[in-house]
Amino acid sequence: MLRELLAVHVSPETARRLCEDVGHQVEEQQTAEAHQPWKEEDDGRENDSCLVISADGAMVPLTGGEWAEVRTLAIGEVPTGPTSPEKVHVGELSYFSRLTDAAHFTELAEVETRRRHVIQAKAVGAVMDGAEWLQTLVDIHRGDAVRILDFPHAAEHLSQLVEGLGAGGRTFPEHMLERCLHVLKHRGPSPLLRMAERLPKDEAQQGTVREHLEYLRKRQALMQYPTFQQAGWPIGSGMVESANKVVVEARLKGTGMRWKRANVNPMLALRNGVCNQRWLETWQTASQQRRRRLSQHRQRTTQRQEVASVLPNPTRLTPAPVPPYVPLLPPEPPAMIAGTSRPSSHHPWKRSPACRPKPFAKT
Image 1: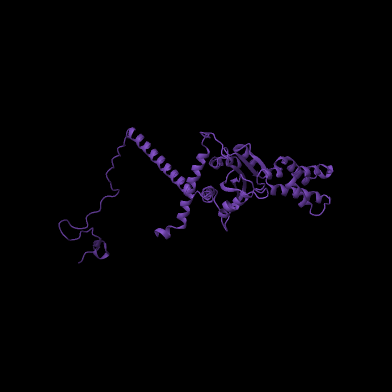
Image 2 (image 1 turned 45 degrees about the vertical axis):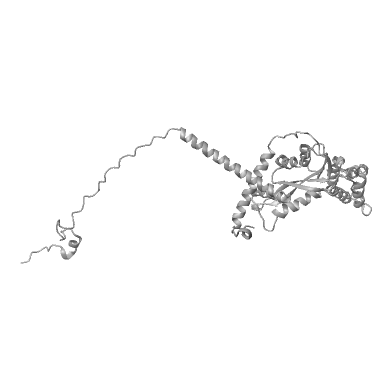
């Protein structure tokens, strides 16, 4: 853009360095906003929007052959009018992504939940998989949200349960899994769990069968899909799955890409600004943070100058006198006879063999 409009050439290294610096500034500003204390709305009114939140993680490559998980929170709005239970369209999507642990991500995500007024929304649905940290995120940001287990995630565990029973010797009618998924989606988990209660004890205690059966039993309240669909909630977390591809992987998982860990979050901050259609606001945030840095630097410089002006001048040490030069050997005699241009006996010419005195006198 600079080349086309202003005929200014910018090398890729300079563009990359400036991009990382802008991303660092946006990240610092968002982190500071997340750590600010919560401020209640002045009027305390409740808006009429119905929001859906969903979070998940995606792996990105780092330098040194390491892989790390980038967590993303997607927030969307569901229509309030009459819609088909089978097709619930979630619009007005926005995203927040960070490479960090679950506890820190839950804290930082408050920047986006405050902006989208999740706490003031009329109703909120949380479509998640079964990870424990996701339930903690919902507890902190909207504890009364309608919690829904992602249907493809539940179908995966149900499929592995049927496969485990088949590996144990039990035979099933044709298309048994498809029938079970249809029952789960349109009648809920209760009929399937009643069927599981009639399993022989030895089959129910098999390792794979017991693991997936306990998983579904523990999350029975999150799988009331007929009730959720009648209320107009989506039962799939496609909004965050697409965010992992469009927001994270499309930028950070290119061919041959390897990222330093310190540069991932600055790039994610800029990527969120682009995908949320807030690039102008993101740029202004970076500019404000840069001006704040410069102002703090000037203040520290002024304080150091003021302190230096109050302190007394340090006593300067007088340098020790330099002793006169004393040659180690006596000076050589002059090479010329004083007042003439004739060489003396000490001239280098007189040192040649031809100028030496003869040992015998001439007779």
